[in-house]
Image (cartoon, rainbow, N blue to C red; front, side, top):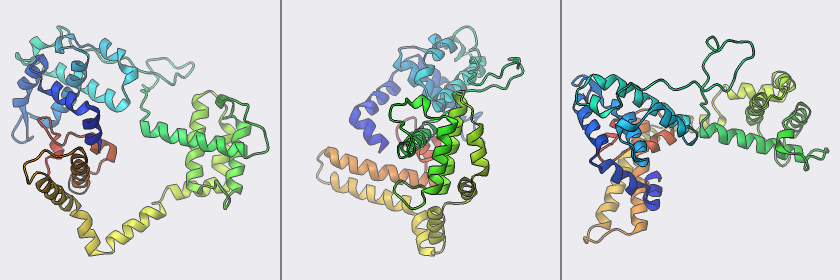
Length: 338
């Protein structure tokens, strides 16, 4: 699905064009490629080149060859990059520093090694010297931001149902100790009415609100006390330490049937065969595939690839699996599955 979206918006074509360029980045990668391969047979594993290719793609988007990149340049793009993008780019700079010993690589890089990035400090404790305080880098993922947004949305909707008029208040005024207690009471009492949520969700949402209050300098002690002492929220915390009922039912059903287990573990083969069957049918008469046919083929193929990764490769998050390169010259090694 990710590939289909990129294809429809032109991103895929742009990425392919950048990878095909014969420039200083291509020369740099060509110099490193012979050194990588299977760990037992090569000096470095294939994965070494993954962050370097990411850095090359970003630099090409901004018209910079390897000799014109720097930590200062990357820092200027920091606000546009998520933590999942920032870390591989920093890894690429460290690896390029390491490869300076190669005569084929050193002339392509800036004269001086890349410096370490400045430390991002979102929590500076008063009275603690900078050299003693732990490093804190902004590592908030998009999933975490979405979850906290959902928690705030539910927090506000719960308050809107209370007797106190809150419609005229701004969002910054709502996460206060007094309103937080109202929300806890509303959640604890509403176990069957409209808008009710499970104890597990209530605990997780209010814990997120507690974090938001703390980071915005609001006194979180009342909320902390509620999380520790409220019976409903304590029940939710306990539930959160176990597998959810839905996931448990799914796993018990799956593992309780040999037929279902075999079907589940062979989904990647079934879907791959289905994709191949569609491809043969679509191209049987030598015509070009339509847009909807390409979309169908890519959708099934993408799901097949993810199934193969999850059941026969590495158990990783779906969003990370979709971000892997599953075709082309820069295919991710883990994607080389049958």
